[in-house]
Image 1 (tube, one colour):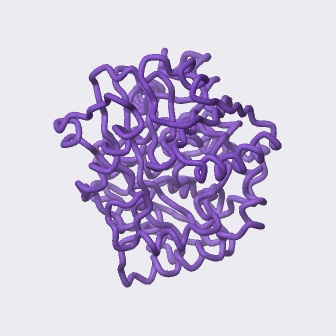
Image 2 (cartoon, one colour; image 1 turned 180 degrees about the vertical axis):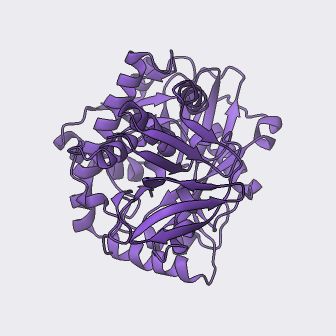
Image 3 (cartoon, one colour; image 1 turned 60 degrees about the vertical axis):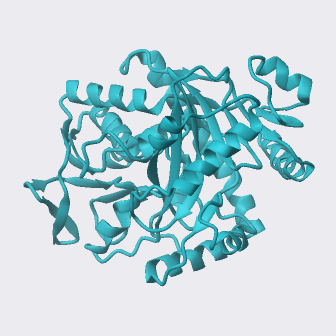
Length: 416
């Protein structure tokens, strides 16, 4: 039976939810407070990452955060602040960052990433979005020190055990896969299971498709309040209208917890800011890579090369810290000999806010608080990679179908 579904949030999670919901015959409206041209869905590294099996909440991360707390140029930065929500989240993050919990999370992260990668490939093959950029070259983890090599080798062994394709490259191996530019690295671990895209292209094509299929996409519309009756959301009030729906999807990224508070739901979620520099000039880079010592990503996209990275916990804001952008440029130039990122490119850097749960797993599913509310947020650095599968799961939940994988690990009601 067709339902009227209101999706709050126009990033990749919200748009993919709308895509699969309309495929099931539902009447869908997407609301976003912005003009839907920027944010995390547009400035991310574009990776499809089954290889990223270790959640952010891993042993030692809190200590790193404390160590970096007073260095705003560091790759993992927590701005010192007395904020109750942040302190609760940080405590839950600390409790989640155990070896046992990480070991339990890894196969879950692998499985959901592989399903999403397959859905990206289906979106490419079915032609709905046209010929968008999608490549399966894998991901190179470049290292300059034995310390970083040994750390990543442990992860590679676990990834290989879980059935992912991993290959080790020496300096000659690097030259073969990346022949046009000299890499200042001792070697690389090649996760052949990964892919990459151009996010801006994908998002624009998805918006066009949704509009052609009669999905209402309402931009620059801010959610103000909710009318609740008999354990359900009856209407959503924005600064422009009242919207009535049978089902409501919260896919507003880092803003989701603020909306949830209006419904007396405490969702542990923090905004993790990331930055990107786009270089249109030819760089010679053809392979996606993580520069391990620099803690940053490099992606050859359609028409430009993207340099992205950092995780900054400083609240919900769009302030661009110049020292963090400069650190990305410096890190890239340190790994790629002869690369020089121009000041105009640095000045045009953008940022986006990634919604981060305490345990590194997203929130996907219904909540016991309200019968017709579904959460789809908290994906941290995997938001782009997990867009399609999250949208499909949301559609399966609302259509009362068997879900593509068990939802219990992603429950919005889970305890930390």
